[in-house]
Image (cartoon, rainbow, N blue to C red):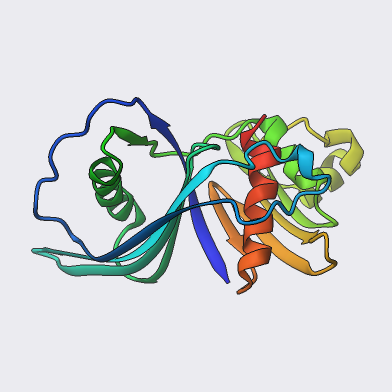
Length: 219
């Protein structure tokens, strides 16, 4: 199962500063590729078929007076859609610290200033489009007046249906089931800027990322 933090990124093209030398990142391995296969159907709906992807793994370890914070991490920087997916596979280090160190490393790696935004702010229309692409919606949590509200509870209290609120509110949480073009189902959870894909299949994971890019990021 892959749980990824989604971060939007920007590229300003400026030369980055020299790498400072000391970094909590070790065992850093990275390679570049393009999209191996477009899984979206019809294929021409996928907006980034030629985008470059920088993906890799690394160890993170940072020592402070509180002790040692460490983690094992994988990531994908998908340049066409301007998004960074970060997976903390194990460890105690905070994701914010991991991403900050990775941001610095990416500046050096790419030779330009890469801005990784702290928060992911998708459009309401984008997340609803992602939901509409699912085969099954198990549960939804709406964001109503700065509070997270279960759709089921809200629908019962207001005596309304799914169609009544479709697209009307921001989505905080969604538990969904998608079906790949070759028929395999995959469970996906969107949770406040995190994407959890219940599969160990590289093909299914790539399909969900392409679906997310198409529905959410290309809006």
